[in-house]
Image 1 (spheres, rainbow, N blue to C red):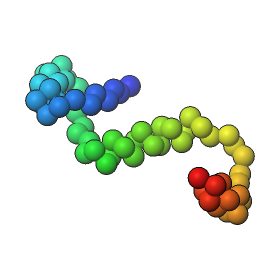
Image 2 (cartoon, rainbow, N blue to C red; image 1 turned 135 degrees about the horizontal axis):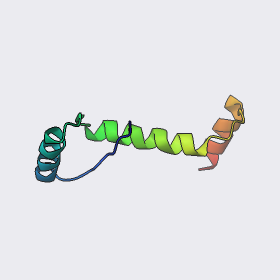
Image 3 (cartoon, rainbow, N blue to C red; image 1 turned 30 degrees about the vertical axis):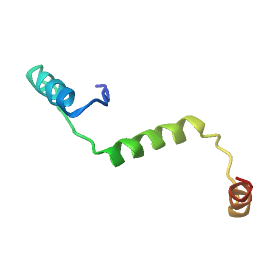
Length: 65
């Protein structure tokens, strides 16, 4: 099973949702904050290094920005 996310205006979303349902697909609507959380999670997953950082290292990096 796979999934796609399409971000569009309300009118287009309604049409796409109806089409997907007619084709037998399950449709899940996301609010903007849920969409942003998904994107953040995707970015975090793609940047994982497997290296742990101490709390001090994290705060030092944040202070520099």
